[in-house]
Image 1 (cartoon, rainbow, N blue to C red):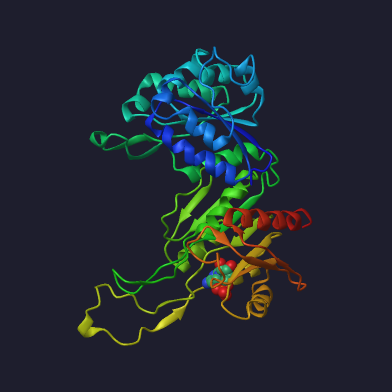
Image 2 (cartoon, rainbow, N blue to C red):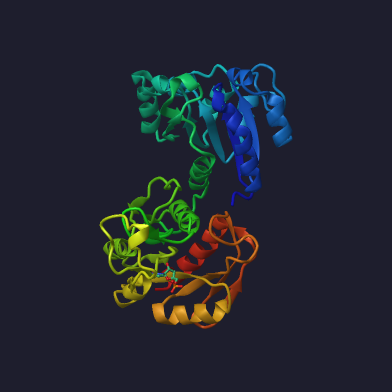
Length: 400
Ligand code: C5P
């Protein structure tokens, strides 16, 4: 996903510095070339040797003792496609805002003309302090991206929960994607995505559902956002964190998902049905918890609306994409779905294939077109499959 991209990470002196090792690894797994530069404070938390071992190049710290070139901060400032500062401490943010260049991280910041992404992490009081908030807003006014830190358990157990945590790695990676994908192929295009499972209540505590995690739909939203689309992500119950800058509609039942999708229909855009919608719901929802003694052995069901099928009728100059999850005869079943739901293509997967399925991060899919063409894709990350799907959707959309 980040093939050929050069990412410089400026590590500042916060406890979250240790999390940057895994970030380096993840970016390398995405085929980026990563280098690091540390503030003297960062070395109190983590050794430059750790980063040197991970990246295979020096992790410079000292402004006055260049490792690689005579004028290190200028070389560092011109080398990357993106300069990520993580964790960015309150002090470093203050220095960025006021133009102080007293170490390699801050001097590189001041010198660079490349895109910068600042990812703060600090104690809640420090983050909420008006001085920090003023510095952050000053940087944002200068069009420098500063990611909001997250709420959660802070480093010191005594602090408990608060705002100031370094965002989880997938969130950081998604911000990096968005920065580096400058070609906004879907700029201004409305994309509506359904994701995850739905829940159909039997009584106040029980429901019918399925194992869909929502990962595929969320990956599609992530990639569509990086491509510049206007996204509405309509999702059922999930533990996943929604991507930023996406219109999120959280629903529970298939009916709610249907109504939300209809309300957010992407006229002249792209509709992707990645949700595993419950086909049936209990005919009657018991108001009280059903007691074992009174339970019937059969729960009468009625059919839920088929979202893609219903919206086929309302289709307005848009691309419609569906998913098919089959354990056998997948192509034959998928072909029937293309016809009945009026799809431009369908993504077919079989959860019993190794690496495919509900909660994993990878998928093995075939893409089937109405004319019978099949694109058999290798095992890949769901985020990579999302790119394949959106690129195909984009071509069809361009030819509408
Ligand atoms: O018919 P089947 O459920 O296998 O079709 C799967 C495709 O149809 C997926 O794209 C899914 O999101 C969509 N679907 C739907 N509404 C339903 C059931 C499935 O939009 N009630």
